[in-house]
Length: 129
Image 1 (tube, rainbow, N blue to C red):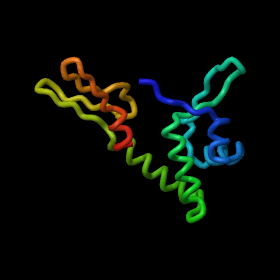
Image 2 (tube, one colour; image 1 turned 180 degrees about the vertical axis):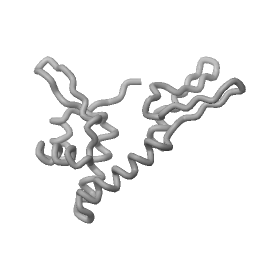
Image 3 (cartoon, rainbow, N blue to C red; image 1 turned 90 degrees about the vertical axis):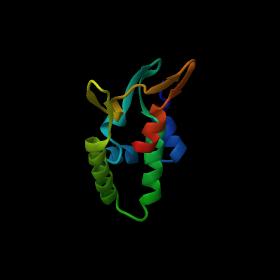
């Protein structure tokens, strides 16, 4: 399962935001450092983001910035992130043991039914994270 990425350039163009605004949001914690993915490309090194993750965050910032200060919004997001870090886990219990996994660390979660395979991870990340 490969996640769809969006380049920094494409993100800035899509939402009409400046380079300076993006990095100000990063410094404020509105867009976490770990979301910035640096990759080598034929033209040099470029920055990418998980499309679903960063686009939903940019939309939120743009929608809320008129009604609430960016500092307040950053505080809200930080609180939510802390809650997620402590309680968002998959717990798998069998008759032999119980194992806990951070949902963010999961690479695949599938149900196999004969030849049919259903990936639950995308659904879980959308609903839970």
